[in-house]
Amino acid sequence: MIRMSKQTDYGILLLTEFAADPGGLTLSARELSERAALPLPMVSKILKVLTREGLLLSHRGARGGYRLARRPNQITVADVIGALDGPFAMTECVDAPGDCRQESTCPVRTNWHLINHTVYKALDNITLWDMTRPLSPPLIPLTGRSANPLKVA
Amino acid sequence: MIRMSKQTDYGILLLTEFAADPGGLTLSARELSERAALPLPMVSKILKVLTREGLLLSHRGARGGYRLARRPNQITVADVIGALDGPFAMTECVDAPGDCRQESTCPVRTNWHLINHTVYKALDNITLWDMTRPLSPPLIPLTGRSANPLKVA
DNA sequence: AGTTAATAGTACCAACTTGGTACTGATTAC
DNA sequence: GTAATCAGTACCAAGTTGGTACTATTAACT
Image 1 (tube, rainbow over the protein chains, first blue to last red):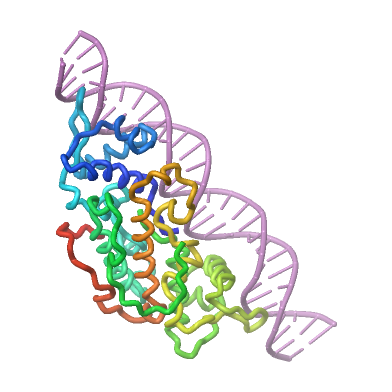
Image 2: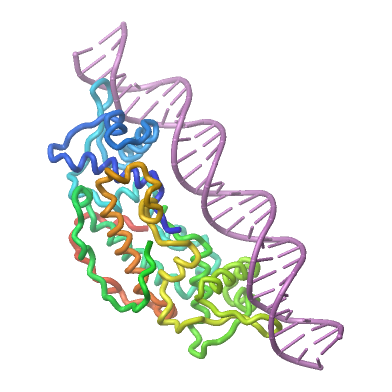
């Protein structure tokens, strides 16, 4: 299925803890693991990646911890996915051009690039700040053309 | 990463072969595997699933084969994903309510449902018929709010 | 009726990915 | 100097996925 990894899911949850506090607070891995009710080693692992990828700033030593590198409204869901799940690519041909034998003749390749871009932009339009409160439904206006029954879970 | 399975990728490619022909043609698994340059066992496996899920009609015996169960403009990319990849769910909490310990307190859960729905609708807006020709860029109008640099692959 | 061409169904396996843990080293506050 | 904290890496078990093989069933054609 098309699914984010749990790491990314957790990552967004953790970052949202920071985003919910307007003061740009610093939290240690231990504090975060308690707040989010997630195992400490996992939280620690994720925070390290988010720091390496530039979404968090870290401070080492006693009374150290992490804080957001940018303001909550300037970090998007797409940023977090990019940091933890790697480049956003719904099909192989999008992030590994050349690996697919069909590439030269594939009739749908260019469409996949466009679709991928569209979905990416949708997720890049949602910030951590947005995630701290309920989103209003008209998130993205759609051209409701399809008459198919809704089969979303 | 957020990626469709190869099976779904192949599935869309195979169905597009049917969709490109206006006459509602019938193709055998062997013919399709040659057209799409994919291994026959894999093609056969995918076609069986698509038939079971109601996207294809099959005809057994000599000179049998498969054909689309609906017209190309009435089968969407989301349909194919649903058939081959299972229910469309970007996070666990969307398709397996109750399995997540955070569920009762999770601050972002309702947002995930909405985001999931939005992405689903975007993919449900693209038909097989669309995939047979280049899509025009304003696929889905976005409210270009985010100022983040584009990091899509 | 028999032969051939085709799908249906299931079982299987190797390889890759993922969630999760453990351990050692470096840094900083007190 | 000691305790708290992050950094980095290595590791493993379990699940998922891509791909193959085999048998049974169906239908056209002669």
